[in-house]
Length: 259
Image (cartoon, rainbow, N blue to C red):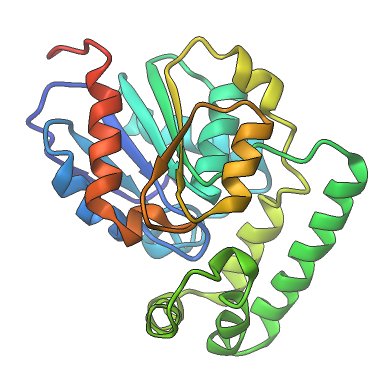
């Protein structure tokens, strides 16, 4: 079973933009960006356990790479850019490093962690994610999400923004979210920095101006950082116009005429 996805602007004969959302999200969240990047065809994907792909399951990152490759093949997409936020960004980076990259034009990652270097860090993160997964499986999802959005990474959110996210995200299936959280945990993810630095593909790492954690991470790992003004971790949601401007400018640097 391949991923459920939707095509937009498919009349444009250019490389596709493949949009990969974060944990607890769905493909629909990219709609404002798709409307601001109309010169390119877009494929908006629901990741395993999310949205209309709720019945799709994977075991690990290798499984995810294969599933993404098969989905692109099924959709007859052979030239494309990967654009991913948070978990979607980690999936995109892992795919660029270990997947079938024939036809991959480049990589745009928003707030995705390229990995943990030490075994101890990975062990601790896996336990951390397993604790959250237990809660998603056993407690009312609204209650878990209330605590989820108290994490420091979301500290820039206003109370009404936090409440809106809880309302939207509570449509998720807690069991499936837990599966994806465990199986794609940062504790299972390889350290991607060395391979990312060796990529010959165009690569941009987007980060909100107020997201100090991921700005520091990008600088420490020498990733090609582009900041989005006046926003935090979820930059594309908070300032879609500025995010789309950065994406369109980056793509314009590469002379991809109509195929």
